[in-house]
Length: 329
Ligand code: UFG
Image 1 (cartoon, rainbow, N blue to C red):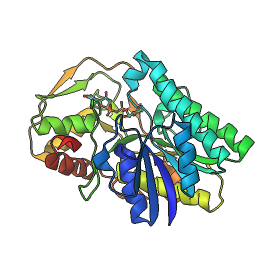
Image 2 (cartoon, rainbow, N blue to C red):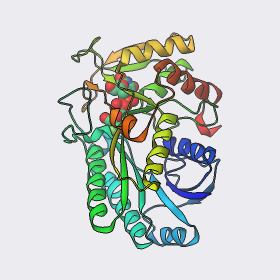
Image 3 (tube, rainbow, N blue to C red):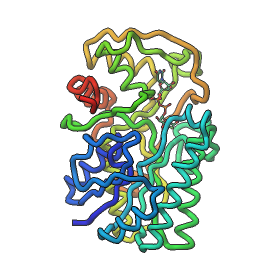
Image 4 (cartoon, protein in one colour):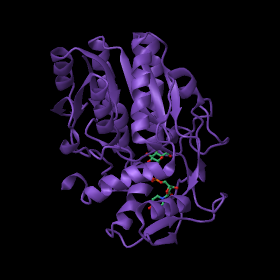
């Protein structure tokens, strides 16, 4: 059984990845400092508490285990906070990632899968966004992801560290078996907030602006199921194991849903009224973010299993209903 180091494996996407890896006969070794991750979400493989800033710990991990590849999910991801506290983002998302890559080079571990983001594109000039779209991120979060992509290109050339950067659109949904879900503190993402409103934990969902140049005036996003992201990671990993070149791939469904459509779908899925009110725009929100993932389909053989937004919301709702306090009990 091959061991894969899953950095940030106690987080939302990382924990789903560990379940998926384990189902496909890999042994996940989770490294997570639990700043945002949840110990209860680590149910597969081995757990090590720690940070990528601890090079001594990383060296010990690479010495103790035969690690065939690293998947890196451990980034801070609050776009707004990255604007007010960029140092925190450059430190964790770039400096700590660089430290991890240096130890990988030292131990000759040469396969790396990186969680990048559509935030690296900035304001889209063309929809759907393809991988060759200009990358001009408009916030420090997006810049940190782009910097790591660039570091990876240079590490490939200089040290032979092969990598695939996966640019996610809007990760959503939960484990179809209901064992894992999305639990951020604070929560800022639309679908969990809508579902917390359905549960009565919030009085209403605030819609950030309704005069965007879109079908109903609210922002349009491309929601992609978290298990479909996991599938893409495994395909990317196997591509590297097969000796094929790395690169960058978008991961989205290619369908755009407005904020109002998401709320309406959630009303249908939950059977709850979900009160909504329109408030000011949130700074830095592009009107439309929809990606083309043809490259991932052609080259990785990626086939999303949960492309329908109702199904995505339903998987999230099942988890929220059963875990109204998230992993907190
Ligand atoms: N929204 C609301 N009300 C809310 C929360 C969100 O109207 O209470 C809207 C946002 O304005 C946006 C849409 O719902 O139009 C989706 O917002 P999310 O915060 O769920 O997701 P984002 O599209 O802002 O962000 C996602 C990822 C980021 C990533 C970004 C790329 O969460 O990590 O895509 O732009 F950086």
